[in-house]
Amino acid sequence: MSVKPEQASALFAGPFALATLSAPEGPAFPALVTPDARALDLRLALGDERLTMRGLLEEWTTALPRLRALAGGGGGDRRPLSDHRVHAPVEPRQVFQSGANYRQHVIDLHVAHRAPGDDRPEGERRAEAAEIMDRRAAEDLPYVFIGLPSAITGPYDDVVLPAWAEQPDWELELAVVIGRPAYRVSVAEALECVAGYTIANDLTDRATVFRRDMPQIGTDWLRSKNAPGFTPLGPWIVPAESITDPGDLRVTLKLNGETMQDESTKDMIFGVARMVAHASQTARLFPGDLVLTGSPAGNGMHWGRLLRDGDVMEGSVTGLGVQRTRCVRETA
Image 1 (cartoon, rainbow, N blue to C red):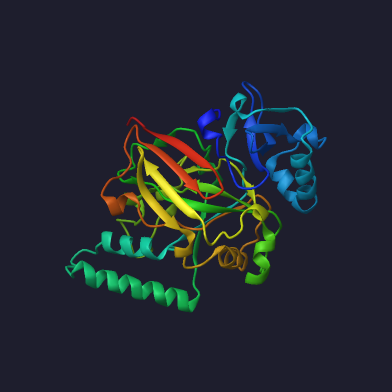
Image 2: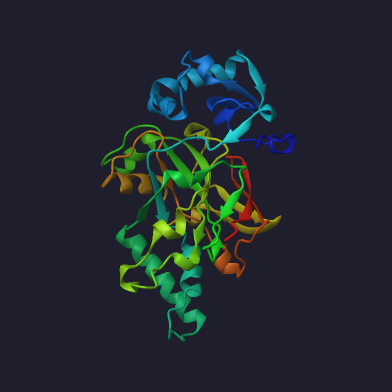
């Protein structure tokens, strides 16, 4: 889907952002996008016809000054965004997903997922969940698991709801884009490894989160989160230098025009630096990898309203633009 004029009116914070675009019938290419809704093909501007977004991020330290100069210079063949299709901004090697990272969201889920035979009043169960959150924060224990790059789709593409998904739900999130290899970095070093930020909607089928055949196994993230297209991403990568404080951004999701999620990243239990540092203690993070930071309160389970055929989700994060996706139910 190409960018419409109304989508380009307030694109992003800062003097430029990065996108992966394609012209009709043409290949995808990395682009520099400016606030006047025009795009510069970075293959031509940087003299590398084989350049990809991930390749650009692998050279982020040296590429960033050149991108600043291109944004400020006004040269090159800049074409309207409306002439292009917008794809997911990057194809990562790895996707690190954070669970249970917004205090109010986790409390809501704890109450919604009542264990069989648990007849305690809601207030008591909420107090229990709050105590768990306080303990996790005090013990410094982020919860990170792995997602599949094959689940990623573009920011304006249709989202196919699989026929087997009984309870598909939305989870809008701030996504971190890695710009420097990170392995066992400290919290103090972690933000130096961040190239920028984008938007992810980490869809989840609530009915398959927990294994019914063997409850002791726990969560089944493969089944519940990794169907093709279950992670709409983008539209842009906004450089980290253009985002003053990733810990103070508004995450908003509207379903068919009605606001369902509207929360600040201040409600995160663990901030961006802590999540990146934590993931790097076990895994090697590479340029272009994504770290999804969790979703705030206001999911479908909270509202008792899950995704259906024809639903339109509009997700925004302060300074990062807007993605808009339509749900299409797969026929059995």
